Image (cartoon, rainbow over all chains, first blue to last red; front, top):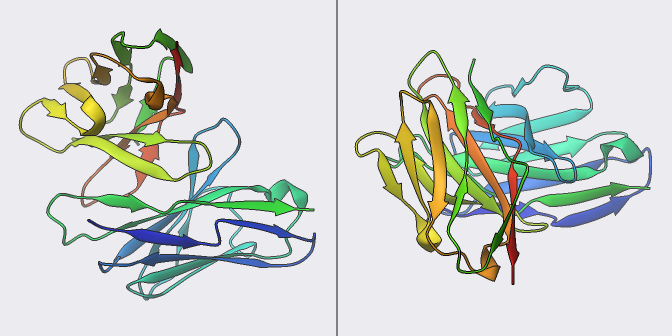
Length: 117
Length: 114
């Protein structure tokens, strides 16, 4: 089945530094990838949608300059949290889908726990 | 715009008892519906999905859900739960060929009591 690999699974960084999170589709071409943020005991909030080779579409209230998304290939999307602050600490999850799949599947990564100190 | 409402934030149930997790959606167009499970500090795993056809959908781990268009519901059921079913369950909705976004409900935490 479809597998999405997300790295790192956890990261601790100092306030003011940048952190990059990778999301890779291992056995399919991800024409679209999604980035979600999840606070403790809450639901997943969609941050942005990225299509290969084009600019990401951000949800209302998400700072484009702070959360940089790159989807340069059909198997890789990256989320960079720039100048991270403690309030950016959260669980980030990516999702990828292949529109060519007849069973309409979204596959999720295992998530990245970001802690900014 | 689409939205999803999960009516219960927490559901306690005794082991081997049946359970139903409720989900209602709102949309002006036809939607696709999903149930996902999330174990602590992990990503989401698809339990089942409704795209079209039979309104009773069977998924993994013994779960099933029934799509009810008139009541705009997609409740998740399991006839007999196990301690390993303790997790967070999310109902989600999407519209095919639109912007492909999948919108999640707030989640229901299933507590299995021994």
